[in-house]
Image 1 (cartoon, rainbow, N blue to C red):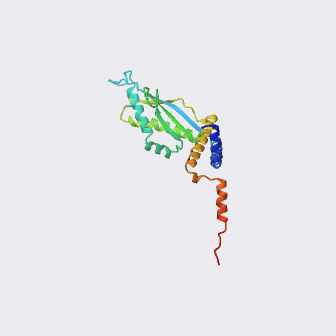
Image 2: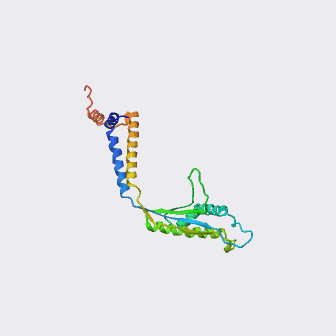
Image 3: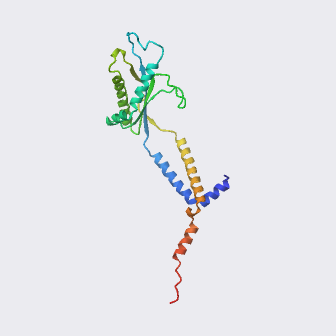
Length: 223
């Protein structure tokens, strides 16, 4: 589309352009005055027991038993039941417990017995409180899964690298660029729709003619 065509589109649908611009300004105001977000993360390392029992499944170089435990714990922590329990205990922030992926989402590689805890909220207190609840619940769930196993033979979880609640400022340039792009897309889609349905487009000249016709007195018939 040429510059001239864009200018003609703006002239034809300046009302729609103004409406979209008002909505964009309102969205920008909301973004600029929205409270900052906080995020807290930590890494969970599953550790094999040092057992003298024979046979000891952890004597091999394979991390398969630990990775299996990792997967079971992650699924348990992300189950609806556990999420409700954490919320009931005061965990109001969003949280996630995920296995560490060494590759990407399309071809995941869960080759290490590690996981991550992430909590996010608009409040520092909510972020940290939820993190503490999730960390304690994870250790409790891991112990409950091994209740019939001798303590010296139990897998343990070491939670390291706690970041503490970190404010998430984002990238203002990306936000503004994204908002401008969405505003342009919204206007062009609306303008194209109005071009295909000209009866819905509002034009001042047509509105004045409609008002004039409405006010024109009807000719009276012969008495």
